[in-house]
Length: 206
Picture: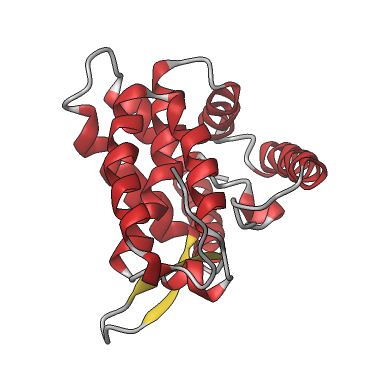
């Protein structure tokens, strides 16, 4: 098989995989063109994270922008085989099962894409969370959904009856991974605390 013929086939395989990736619906709701709400999909999320990474990285020293953007684009590809779960409210047992599923999914991606080792190596490097770029993208990944929840007036929070104290506790913990992102979360936190109307069930959070 010629290189061109092989590349044409593998690009079709990649487009098929990316189409499947776009069909994975997240729990987060976004506004659509009709000003209604629909679930965000994995492709939209990854693209939004990559664009936000591109934007913010120009203000952060000691960040390899291109590496960070690759992390953003690849970070959820394991969900092709592992699926998506709500980030808030998982038990330790559920978190462990999720990690095992994602490890199996990554192994499967390596089998499916031996000719794209940079993709799977990027995912493995990201999962280690031992570089500035990985920690930056990890923290930003946890904070961006807060923007969507604020844009939609808390639609996701109300839809799933999520408690504000659980949102704040989760993001307080995860955003600390990278200081510049944590500072952004602290600004968003003020808005979260100011909007009782964004939650069905509310408790005072300090």
